[in-house]
Image 1 (cartoon, rainbow, N blue to C red):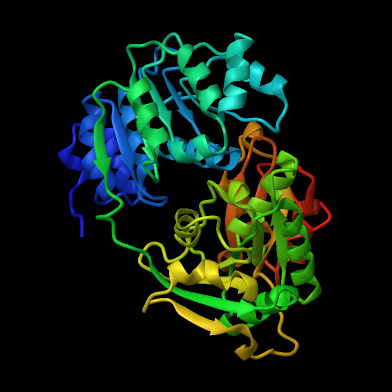
Image 2: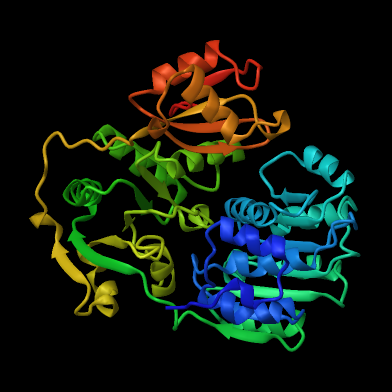
Length: 460
């Protein structure tokens, strides 16, 4: 186990205090190996799996270098998806809690260009975004990188897989040559090594994947007929009875069909794919993260960047295209020392594809041996209440908690995760208390003001 403390690094007293408050007691492997080099302004090429603490590694580095008085973009973090960009920006804001007046902007596609343009006109210190939208702002000169000190490519292998290489190169052409470049990747294909050689200078190579402790995951493989895959999925869920499940499908259209089939069987499920509007994606991700949705059915691209700390089970409804993708999928369960469960469904015709997966640790079973449990239902413990007030209204989680536990008289144990966006707040309420909470929010006030409130349902 790693026991290196952050106090061994040259960090400010306020940063060390904030890290301690956030529960960062000791460094993870990737933090211990990369942070000294990052703080020394070296280029770093780091291979680390999701959940290894890499965001804090580069986040602490760029925040330590930040000159708040210089109101220019000093750091740019490129991510493959909107979801990952949002998650990275959220983590950077947590790490920057004790640095006054830090402005962190996200620039991603799927949302209106105008408001982003307006925010950039007011200046920013750190930009987190997807390559396409960042490039659009650079081309339109609403974003300047002339003062850039640090460029970060997060999950670079996925960005290359998604075809962003040309956009990445064009973005880099706008950046100063005298910069620090940090490249984080879960894998080291040849394309990553070529990219590193092209954009980094004497990069320090950090490789922690083999030394990181593996997630504790029990892996099942179920063979079935092609027309019985959905019924097999339902039997798997009813057998293992997890609280929350991430189901992977290889196609966008199939995610909707699987989610609909599960709902018809009494298992609460939502689909997530790339054709959805950003507002839809936000609603779905919030509900899954705050336990207002039991099953999320997603494609690999749509699920990229999901940060669900306690995920009971992952199901491969479709076989992953290769073992690297399979490992990445199932690595979302069994985190933080907890035991996870991963199940893969394959048809009789696909059995030959699984030969390379067979070993003494993995359990292969015939799906026909699964017992059908009648009247099985799976409903999430919470329901999400949406309040039409957010950061722009100076809304804080404590304000909402105070209104619900005070005037509404709802015990704190019935209130779950609270997510506050610019204009809306999402509150997870135990389903036993949702009507009472909704009624109070309609008739009552938060911070002395009245806000519209509604229950987030499937048709929203």
